[in-house]
Each structure stands twice: as structure tokens, then as C-alpha cells.
Image (tube, rainbow, N blue to C red; front, side):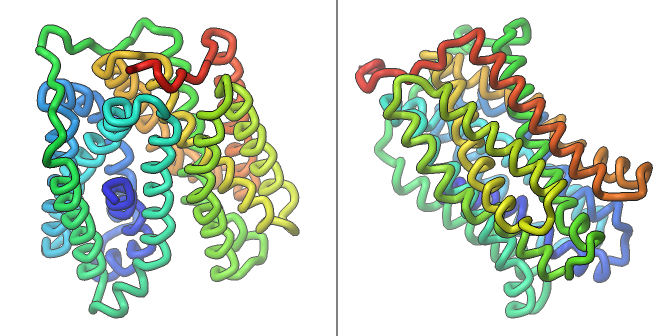
Length: 380
């Protein structure tokens, strides 16, 4: 539920941006910050998650992250103007950075024997939160009396997730590392930089499609409703894929086949969306399966590479820091591509380029690491 709440606060605001802009009388650029700031903060403050988990333990660190998201989310629903709305979004993004960075460490500490299956559970929650919040944001606003109440409703879900988290983990002992043993980020590690490249390519493709795919197909003659369904078809199959694919990889001898397969699926889907619009719904489903499976597998890789939780935390922090920071620029860069070329066709082919970079980085990781699935008793 915590993972669901994290993504609901990020994705749920997107469909409400036109109402927010009209109500507050501000510009597209200002309301666009409400989507950019959380993604950027998830990157910039991911290292904070590693240090918080090491010094406080994963239970307290996740509690801090969820509390920031929930409480400042409630505040965001009542602030009177656009400037305060943007400012309050910053601590929400920081909380997301902490929560996102701590989640893999929860798996490392509590489910070390099947890391991909554990990761699949919370990434399924992420996908469910994304799909559910995108579908419910506008109906909630209509039913409750406006965009403010919709944001408050999402924040109440986060607070409920926080309460459930505290109840379910109340008897779990904390494992806190002494300050002297908290490792720095592995800046000199080639493997760490490849993980950054993988995460950046994957996330840039996702946020690029999430931002511009509907507009690209409206430009091709589709109605806004049809284009909206196309985007939702990416989110829906990602929910089961983010659980099933990593679970299957846990039962194999290596994650390499799964990583390469979903990378190729994502590339084929991106090419299909760019070049074969007549069967776009099928390509969207294909893209969703690839996106859901890839996210879960990539979030598992640091757990495979590092045995010690604090070192895994440092690797996760660097991957998220670099990856999200790059991905936060993708919607802006792709928007500039549209402005320069005068067509969204170039934008869709740029997403194909992101997928090519993803496949190349996966193959390079394959060359320098075995990606062998840890045996079930490896941590016993």
C-alpha cells in the first residue's frame, strides 16, 4: 500500500493540471513544475534515503518519507496560490525520494531469499497507484467538489498507508549501521554508472510517453478520449507484469534472459507506436508489459550486486539519483524536439532512441556481471 500511495501522489495530479491552472490563473510552465519537481526530487534526494535507512533503520526511514508525503500533501490541498502550491510540492518530492530509495532496502532486509519477488510486490503497487490515480483523479474532483479535494483524498490514502505501515512493522527490529560504516556513493564503479544509464533510459522512455503520447496521437487524427485510452493501456498490463516477470526470474539461474527479453519488448513496442499507428493499442499493451517487468527487474539489480544492506542502499541511491535527475528533463527535451521539428513523430522516434540506449546498457551490464539469481539460502 505504501508503494501505491507513493505513485498516486505523483501521477494523480497530472489529469488535474488544467483545472489547477484555470483556478489559480497561472501558466502552463508553472503547473508543469508540479509534475517535474517530484521526479527531480526523487533523483536529487535518493542519497538521503540511503543515509536515513543506515542511521535510522528502514522502518523509521520509510515512516519519515510517508509522513512527509501525506502531511505536505494535505497542506497542498489548501494553499491559496500557485507559488505556495509549488513550494509545498518540494517536501512531497523529498518524501518520495526517501520512500523510493528505502523500498528496495525493505526487500533486502525482510525478503533476502527472493529479492525479485519482493521487489515485484511493491512495484506492482507502484503501477496500481499510477493507473488508479490517473483514472480516478478527475472523477474524484467532480464528486468531491474540485481539484483540491482530489489532492486531499490522495493524501488521506498516504496517511492510511503510513498508519498501516506502522501497525504491520511495529514488532520488526531495526538494523542501524554505525555512522563510520555507512558507505559513500560508488562514483567510481562502472557497474553503478551502468545502472544509472539503465534507469535513466527506462524512466526517460516512460515519462516521455506519459507526457506526449496522447498529444502525438491526437496530432495523428485520434480523439482525445481515444488517445487517453491508449495511455491507460500502458499502465494496466504493467501491474501484473511487474509482479509476474520478476517472480519468474527468481526461479531461474540468471536474470539475463528476463532483462534482455523485456528490453527487446520495450524497443519493439516503441517502434510500433512510432511507425504502425493502426495497431497502436496492441503496441501500448506490449509497452506496458515491458515497462512493468523492467522496472521491477532494474530495482532488483542493486540487491543482487551487493550483499550488505548499507552498500545496496548506496548503489540504489546512486542509481535513482542519476536516473531520475536525467528522466526529469525528458518531457522538456521531447517538448523542445516537437517545437523544433513541428511534429510529434520525431518525439516518438526519440523514445525509440531511449529504448536502444536501455538495451545497450543492459547488454553491457551482462558483460561485466553474471546477474546470477542468489540461492534461497544465500542470506541464511
